[in-house]
Image 1: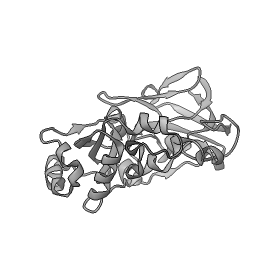
Image 2: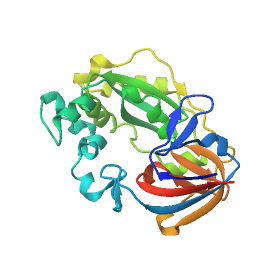
Image 3: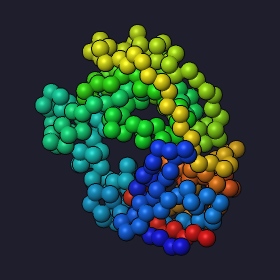
Image 4: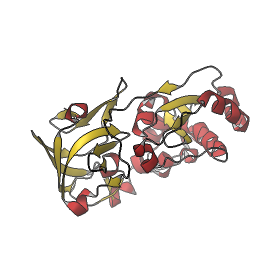
Length: 264
């Protein structure tokens, strides 16, 4: 089988285990069905996810000029506390910002390499947890806009991490945590503006990833530098493909690259 397309974040389906789909313009591939098959990945060119031009990707699948211009790459995407749509203040495109920022958001705890705090739109639960490779997660606050979620995350970062160690996550060196206890422990640090949105009664969500073999020493594939790679797929976790030689390939980090995929 042969496919060519521009890489974008894999689409996921919450099931046991998680189902992964790589979507190209004219094809989609259920990646779970490729476990234990040999896959060849070949770099072809760049294709910015916004302007579609063959220009080097800067960040988040966008070329440099698009990254510093379009609302999809504004600072409030990575730093929700910078959101201003609730004040009717524009950053790059107020209509877009209102659409994204003025909807229910979740502040959550997820355990992938360690317990971390994060923010996502309510509509992105549990997708966000899957993308981070979390094996368990819990919502702790549901607020009506992105700003309130952002300031809550900032407040909680003094007491819990906001980062995931990707190597630890991929090696599956995880310790089960009682996230309900973590939620109760952190309740006192929630800002006054968000205290009324604390979620009192809920349980952990557990996630199961399609991995036959975890790497002991994961090494990240730079497909632009290598140009071509071939290996046997043995697992998928987060947005990473895991191969039998301990090579891992982060689909999310390579958005905007056009590749050939050959499967045997």
